[in-house]
Length: 158
Image 1 (cartoon, rainbow, N blue to C red):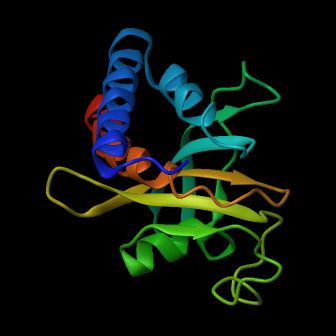
Image 2 (spheres, rainbow, N blue to C red):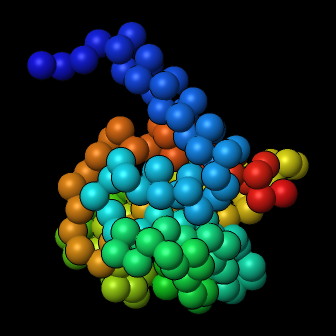
């Protein structure tokens, strides 16, 4: 049974409200956990562009929930670099078969879903993304909430 656009819109508004509440009451790590609970990906993180490096600002790991920060990575080895370069969301279900990633990015990440985070002047700050070293099913329902959450997370961090 397919849902109607009105039902989808109501669901999105509810999820944005829930996300906002979690972010305001419990902070960034809990907000990342909320986002991660909606996706099959192991990780959900906030990353900041810093020249040739991608800096992890905050991370939620489904298998290590107490972990709050991950490592940094060379920019050229990340799908986040593609989001920054294209200034557009990116979803890759399987990097081993996706022509946008195959041979371009050298990373163990197989599945990725990320959006651009902009600062208050509209410049690219970094990304909010889900990622996994295993193939994850594509979920178009993740993108709208990630897009809405990106700005709220930036404001909360600033």
